[in-house]
Image (cartoon, rainbow, N blue to C red; front, side, top):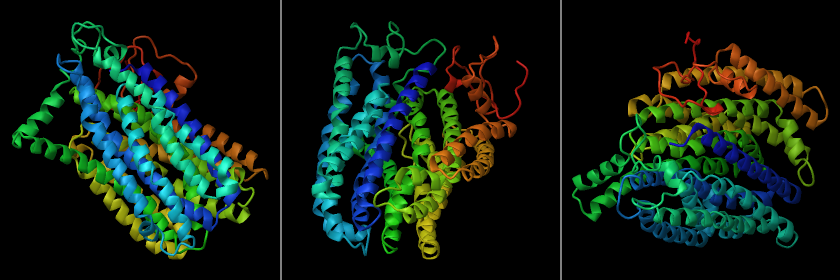
Length: 591
């Protein structure tokens, strides 16, 4: 397994590039707001933007990663124990052509059906023709995002995170360049053209790295020199692919279990296809139902006054920045969890998943407190210029504060589902929980949109995703998911209480100065000061260890790090990185 220091470096690298992509995303939204404001043209583009948003969730962030990272992890584990052909290269040959062909057909279908799709997504939209033109341009993302998501999953399973982390940098750069160069001539259609160009760049920047990994794997086998990826992922050089002494059992058992399942159904190709379909469908249904939140919001907002869809979009993009950054840790460690599950090491998978879940929750709660406290100042600072006026700022800030209530739920869903699908078992529970959340979102949104407009739609979104997160956490113990759900829930509750205290203090600080920059800075400083102190006073997990790591205070000699939850002792690395320092929920016992 990769070391703790390797995971820490990978998480920092991924977070840095993700932050760069998020900043470019803000620049992109600022350009759109300055050039087109929050009116009918922007609403038409955002309806077309539904296609890349849906494709990104299905093909990059959720379904593709949840399916392929465990598959490549099992292939890498099998490579370490087999003397036959390279299983990784065989997996690519078996899956990549079909993926590309299906995605190309999907892109063509979306482009052809755009005149029918737009009225379904936004009935009553004023600029129907403009939305159709933009949708046809963005339909190419179905193919480009599928290829980008495939390569990203393969590289992350190999322990390579640089190229996958930079895809949103190049994507947003493509959109910004198109708006600047073509915006005066093409209007908002230039942004849609930039979406298509940026999607192609996402796949192109990653392809060379995957080709190098596959070429290295072909020369990696018994009796031949081991590549660096083999040494890191498959065990120490010279051990013949066996795990380290005292470690997990042979890693090929997960693949053997899948093959045994196929043989038990009849052995032929149809049986194997049936097993593959059973593994794929739960992930696809979950990813599609999760992205339906955007469809529900825009469907409910279309009859509202012009600009409501734009206000929802700008508020959501800014409010979800803390969630995107917090989930980077889970993105980096998901291949580790999948590799541990494939090797039969459930203890390592549980410890890693619990730490990631609590740390992601702490990070997103700190961000949510800042967003809720200083929403008007943040929106004014980012968008209020050009065609985006003070009324748009007030409307967007009201929606953004409501969105902050659901950020923890969104983060928990993104982190928990990785635990459910780490072993690629046909678990339908996440899809069922997500469908229940969507049903609640739709029903409450239809009710509250009439009373509160766009903020009511955002509140329904927060309620629906929180319900899904609660169901996923409650069902962890019953479905052999590597989590201690009661301990995680207790830790998250304490972190939430600390974030509420910090949000109140930050709200007071943000209201003092008149300048938006000073107000936002004071709110952020208040959260950074009050949240750790309140979390420490409430004995929340991880905060003391992170504070000790930030101050470079070493652990006492002879004292082993502990699990973030008060359970039995586990084997831990002798030289842990800050992300691996465990802090119990209760008091530290002697020794």
